[in-house]
Length: 172
Image (cartoon, rainbow, N blue to C red):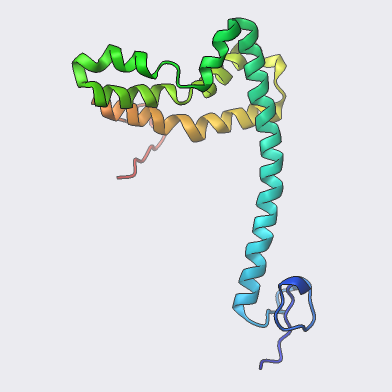
């Protein structure tokens, strides 16, 4: 066995020797597997903390959006969460492109209605959102909407191009 000491927290160490994170780069782990396991657990704990914070803020910006749309549209605001326009879109497009493709396009244009509602609510009532809620709402839009729009455009036969010259690269 090596003379190196494990610096993983005691609950992660299999060697039973000195514990704790390395105090400097010269201290090394007893073996790579112990270090890797410890790093994975550290990352998981950090993700859990971040997810808890993110979900709290996500609930806040989503709830504010629902409240604003309930004030504006009454009971119709509940349609934002159920892909309410998917069938209507499919019905309008089916004669030109077929029902199956039309239904797929309807899905891709209606699945992110809550994201669209957030953007509209933000445009109409920016003062009702905190900077953190705006940040999280914008990130929710950016992680959800673009792929739906790209899919709907592709299904309809419209190419995706870098018309704004921002260096857009499409994965094949």
